[in-house]
Figure 1 (cartoon, rainbow, N blue to C red):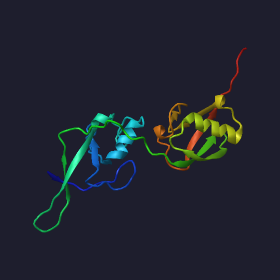
Figure 2: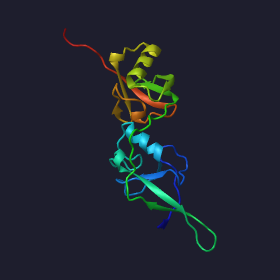
Figure 3: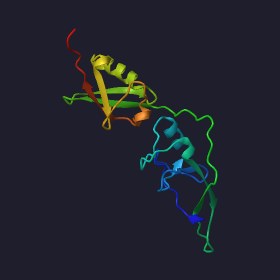
Length: 179
C-alpha cells in the first residue's frame, strides 16, 4: 500500500472521498474521479480521460478501495489500494442536466445569449433557439466549439458545454448554386 492524498475530481472539481474514488485503467497518471462523474462522462459519449485524453470505456473504470492508515505518531493519511476486479456498470444513470446560458458569436463579433437551455439539449435545439433569437434559419447555421463543428444529434454535454457563458461560434452557410 502507498500513502496517497486525494485530489479533486477532474470533472466536477470537488474533493473525492474514500467511498467513491476511482481511476481509469488506461491512464498511467492515476487521475482521480468520483465514480458517478466518470461513469456519466463516458456514458455521455466522451470516451477519453478528461485530463490526459487517453481513450477509455466504461470497462476501464477501476474502483479504488481505501482504508484509513496511520503511523505511530498518530498522523494518518488515506491509503489507496487498487481493486483486482473491475467495477461493473449495468444501467448507467443519465447525466444530470442543468440550465445554462450559451453565448453565440458570429464572424462579425455580434453576440447573442441563449438563456436557460438544458445541458442535455441537442445541438439542433440550440439552433432552433438561435433561429428564434435572430431569425437565422437552422439550415444556414454551422456551430463550432473548441475547434469542432457541432453535430445536430449530439447534446451540449457531449461537447462539454456544461457551464454558463461558454462561447459557441456561429458560421453561416450560404445556400446557392444552380437550380
